[in-house]
Length: 331
Ligand SMILES: C[S@@+](CC[C@H](N)C(=O)[O-])C[C@H]1O[C@@H](n2cnc3c(N)ncnc32)[C@H](O)[C@@H]1O
Image (cartoon, rainbow, N blue to C red; front, side, top):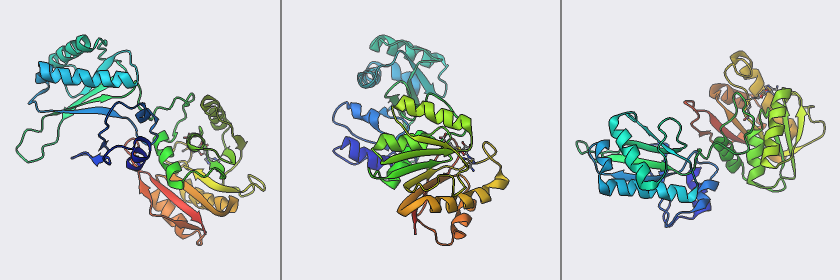
């Protein structure tokens, strides 16, 4: 998903490449510093990335290496300002890192704040291309004082809120169609709804949740994003919850774990969600569901009497869990 968004937004001379040894990163060569990187919605964070052929972090303070790291920090600051930097590294509290921090601070003119510097500089082992060779060290300087996944619109936190980058991926999977009538069922703090509305216009927008405090959170987050939607307190598994309204795009991430429900409720909830969503769906509608309950969801789909046609689910990574995104089309 990130690969495709990068191609579309940044139009790099060469497509993004996988990073050897990692499943969670891509590398993109850009001809210059481009503020558009900060507009990426499916990337959790963007870094200026350097590889340095040194045997240990202590060597990074030497002139040539320090110069490259300082240039990367300046490049990051040119894209987005920060007040201070910190290291994220094994041994970041060692005297070697204290020295590197002091030297880098004086080279760049940016304070080193080991505890709370907002600009993150990661230092980690590189990837050995061949066994037995020294992998060197990678230095990654984040662009921006906060990860891109920390959205400015999130003024109210909500337990179990979806990661905004995953919400953005769900929206991309479903495609943005300006004439879509959109509903976010079980909307919580509104992450899916807000990411959809930020991606492009919609004909109508609704959010539904059982909990008043969830709707309060959605209301505040929508306002911070400069967006508007109709919010309804109702049981989203009740087909009559939205009277005669019909929708072209339905988004949902049902409760998981014990945060907003119980494991025992999960099969019923998923089955009822699919059936209520089918009732609310206009012909040709898409339903996008993010769920951690894979077995439960697969069974609910099998039992849904062919109401929905499912694409192969997309597995995503969220805080140590691997939920999946299901893109379903109304049969
Ligand atoms: C995982 S949370 C959604 C989080 C949301 N996507 C966000 O980013 O904040 C699930 C939500 O489903 C709501 N919920 C649970 N059962 C529901 C039902 N039957 N009808 C409507 N909402 C329900 C809960 O109140 C909770 O807000």
